[in-house]
Length: 149
Image (cartoon, rainbow, N blue to C red; front, side, top):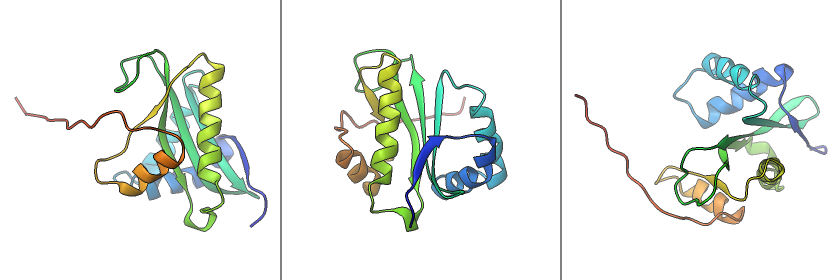
């Protein structure tokens, strides 16, 4: 594998980015992910969308956001939030996810954030391990409930 570059996502990356988003979040179709990613590109002041490129191929992505509302476990505002991160299996093991995560943190720091937050599903132990390896500390566990009325 050649040197992998990390850069802001652009329209030319939508197909590869959407494919990886679908691999991470398979509840939506790849087409729906493409449309959602395209919408995100229109908010560069609030949203950071990074892709990792091996040549022209998108092999990873990270999505970050500035959150001004309350973020569980945080004390300041705004907070930079890791909305999603994924690296194609063939590109794993070389620290790419950590590089993507660090780039999101730096983007938030440059915008005045002092805290970097994220979340994971309670049973996603692989994500928990990644977050710990990337320097995050677990702050709390929450179970959300819903009732139709």
